[in-house]
Every structure is written in structure tokens, then in C-alpha cells.
Length: 267
Image (tube, rainbow, N blue to C red; front, side, top):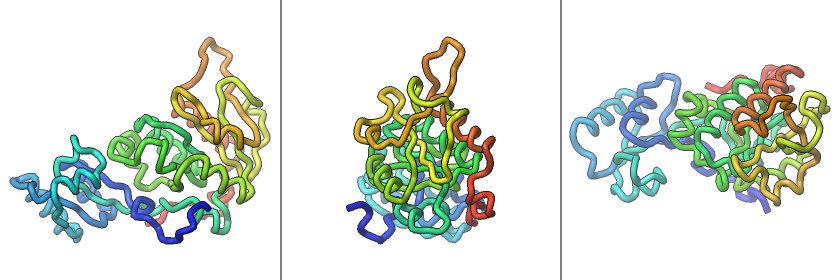
């Protein structure tokens, strides 16, 4: 059973940033809402005072925790510098919840096995710029939504329409049940992207940097599309391929939810 628990996990509401500079930047950004800051009880000195002062100015509570607890919450024991912040991501929600809304998110991307943070961040930025209805970022098998992803997205990750679920296979199941047709993006198989008919409810699955789509997900595809490459290049970087795909969808016309004025990020 997928997403049987209707409670929304904090991981589906916040992006966690860690390290002194990223936390200060989040607190100083008037367009971001920080839910809380967690400061290690070993953090002392001017850096800790700067963070406390910025949090007070922004009206954000600061909680103390053990250094070990901060490392566990950050998921990065080498770079957390004893501080993290949970930043509200207003357009991030569980995939199951998005599929219970009207209208449905329209055309979406699904990430399957993309483990390089820079690629995930660039895909979030591109898909958001192109007005796609959502980017499915599974909690497992894909790079965590951490400061490296935020940096690669140039901050757009905070406002991207991220849809969360457990795995890419789970996403494929949920999308199929909701009436989506699933298309795998391939370097060598399937119909050329620019000639393919794209239904209103379409999910494009992007595979990992080296292995492509996982076998469990590949078998659920409705069809495959490829990017024509007349030059002597075997394949594109996954983020570059995502950019071609996203802006071909723009060329075809705005996704339905944006055309009806429903794609503007909440503030």
C-alpha cells in the first residue's frame, strides 16, 4: 500500500540546510520562511551568536541539541558545522496528495536513480522555469535534497513543485493508477521526442547517470522517447536532456495548470 498514512512527514514540508553560511543566508532571505534552527550545544563563539541574532530578527525559534543529533538530522557529519535550519518549501508535497487534487499536476518529471546533487538541482531549476506540474523526487535512490542540490538549483529548489514518495517504482504505480502515461527518456530507443504525441497527463522518467532507468521502473513505461542527436555524441548529461525535454513541452504549449493560472508558487 502506498502512502497509506495521511500525515505529512517533515521531509515533505521542509528542505533542511546545514552549515553556518547556508543557514545565515536562509535566515536573511525575506522571501524564505524558516521553521526552526537547531544549534548544537557545542556551538559557541561569534558564529553561533550571529545565527542566534539572525534567528531572533527573523522570528525563528532556535533549539539546542547534541552535536550528534545535529549530525543525524543533517545527514552529513562532516559539513553541518553544528547548525541546521528547516526551510519551508511551499510547493513541496507528497505525490499521493497531489494526485488527489483537481486539476491534476499535468505533465511531470520522475527522477529514478539520479544520485549526483548537481544534476538534481539543475533539473529542479529547469523544470520549475518551464512551468511543469511537478518533479517527483523519491526519498530513496535519488540524491537527498540538501544544500548541494539547493546550490545547484540557484535557490529555486525552495520553490520548486517537488512531489515526494518512497521510490521511483512507487511513483510509477501511483501515476499509472491516476491515469498518467509514463514515458522513459532514452538515448537510443523510442520515438523522437519532437515527433511524439504527448497526452495531457504524461510523466517523463529520467534515469540515473550511468545505469538509466531501473528495471522495475522500466517495465512500467507506456512508451519511450529519445532526443535526436545527429552529431557524433552518444548521449547527453541527464540534466541537459531534462532541459531539452522541458522546453520542448513549453514549445508545445503551457502545461494545463499554468494555462489556467494555477501554477504560480504560493507565498
